Image 1 (tube, rainbow, N blue to C red):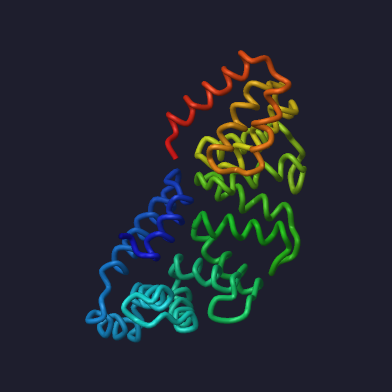
Image 2: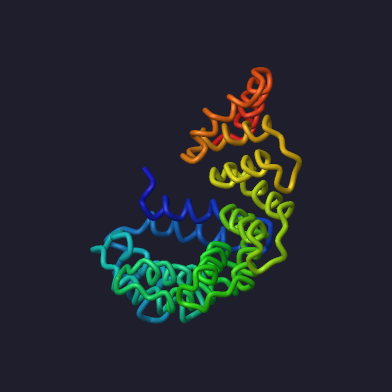
Length: 271
């Protein structure tokens, strides 16, 4: 059975794709850290603590993760953050990202969006896609940093270019609304589609609405229905009513075509 740590890191790695050399490097490092934590046992902890206290950056990160997840030590978020900070100050990109997560969520202390944005920025400058996406969200919401749509677009784009699905969807939203960029339905649809093709259900729903309403593409109810169906089966609750209502406006053969195309797409893109 995978540990909670590995489940979480599997999620992170699913968001950081290998379209750039830095993304490849971070993926490999994350997998290495995951394996090290999985192998950590109580009898190995004293040696790890000794290495961390001597200033070994990787050991500092591993000890932070051990305390965070309660692996071979008693779970302690404050102690985890102490070691994350040491590793982060030594330039470890995962520790920088994790500190951002902990400050944003208030794990081991009070929520502090300013500190979260600070550490996300450091990780983002090292090319860490998930940090770039989260930093973009901070700029979009004005949390811990000034509200700044162009800055949000900048960081969403950096993550999106590495294949980060939620960043691609977020970039699409910025283009559709004209936030920090020149409004363009065609660009919005392009980014929604990139995320949708990766299985991101919310983006699949947005692709469907673009086809339904003829935004960035000629209106096409059959294709819209196909994407609503895919989004529904991918777990997007907003798609439910459209899967029921849209066929009432369509010819039966078009509904059948949409169902077949959705089934073919899902077969080619197993969840």
